[in-house]
Figure 1 (cartoon, one colour):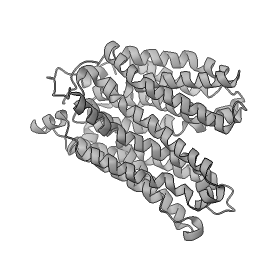
Figure 2 (tube, rainbow, N blue to C red):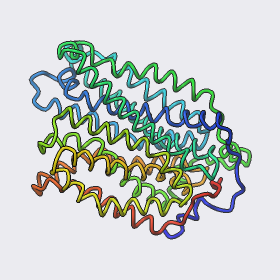
Figure 3 (cartoon, rainbow, N blue to C red):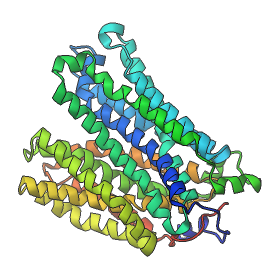
Figure 4 (cartoon, rainbow, N blue to C red):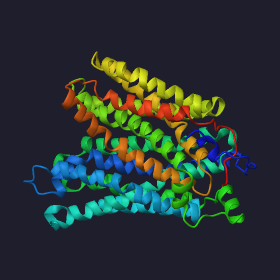
Length: 440
């Protein structure tokens, strides 16, 4: 793994990039709109889990909620398949076609969930269709993040690559908050009967107009100069995934390891702590929701400035510093959560800020570790592995640790260990900031 940093940062001539404000704004929107929709979809489903359990499984089924979360998890399981397929499409045909397919798949599946008949109307067909649509949604989402960050990174100027690419992660946080707020408003404005009758459909149907806007933005996209150059040089690979596995196993492993820390750092503070605060009697459900919203808001505002900092000091100092903070401060922050409501909120915000610093840089690093010919395939596959290892599984591992150890601070070890693994990998990487992306 010593030469990982050299794999994609060969001495290649600079590629053309956008520099005017208007063009940069278009690139940012084209990348961030898809990640916003991706995380909105996931959050809306997760926050409506208890309602969906009552609607899509028999009323006398005691495991209905478990089945609903299992259907939620299916999307994570099929992500690598979508990542491989859409990654290959992006590396063989172009970034733009892959991003269009991704957003159509995500939005189409989500909107169709809002049109599904319930178990009372269609019997077993209802949960089967729900599972099928979640599979489509997950496969489409599996190609979204890698495609979005690749597109922005390949168009951004070398000196502002991290800052601009980090905007895709702002989309993730805004989407998560949007899904949570949409469900919260339904619970505030509707009776339980109205929610069960028709209200639950609204958050899913809302994705349709969002998708139309995303398609309009992405339809006007131009192909990245890096991929155009790859085509002109006749260096497009027929089987990019096979080339990736054969020639770039080191960068792929690095992305999976560094990505696992990013996933754990996202799902623990922004998702798991909402349940944790309630279980530990620290906050009410409503207060826990507002605390999560506060931490996500602060993180979203901090990502871009952290990206600017990464462009100045480099990827290694930024990410190594954050992983050290994860290892040193996560356990004390979990201890502080028991002191008071304000201490718990401050601790959650602190973890969110660390994650913001990490997200400002890690996806840019992935783009710099791989050449254009396999870049999207490698990022999609790497982060899909990370999502399975430490994304969707993080809340379950945290719950198991608390049950097994009896210690309310035991979930902190997930982030500590993930941070340690990422730290060890980062120590072996070469600095990649400020250099042109390699074509091959």
